[in-house]
Amino acid sequence: MKLSQQSQAIIESAIQKAINKYTCGCEQTIVTDIHIQPNQNSGELFIYDDEDEELSSVPSMNGQPTKGTTFTKMLKEFSVPCFAA
Image 1: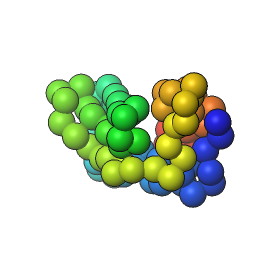
Image 2 (image 1 turned 180 degrees about the vertical axis):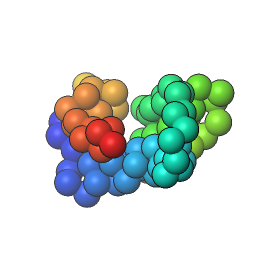
Image 3 (image 1 turned 60 degrees about the horizontal axis):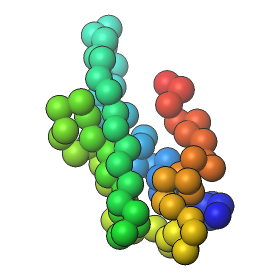
Image 4 (image 1 turned 45 degrees about the horizontal axis):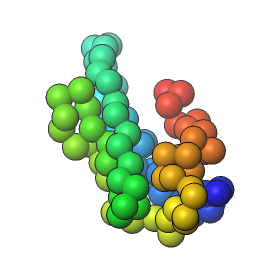
């Protein structure tokens, strides 16, 4: 199953929103882990930092998995170019 361009744009926007919380325009370096947690049953996607604080979320996606397809497999098919700062 492939993500639609709209779904990919929504996910990229949510990830960028999470990453932007760590940009300050100063020389300070911030180190954290970012966890992306999909909910296979609801189609929701949550993004957390290493202290389990929610940074961003996607309420529901139109590319919901069908029988035989997991949401995680669907996410693996799309790349995240917005990690490059």
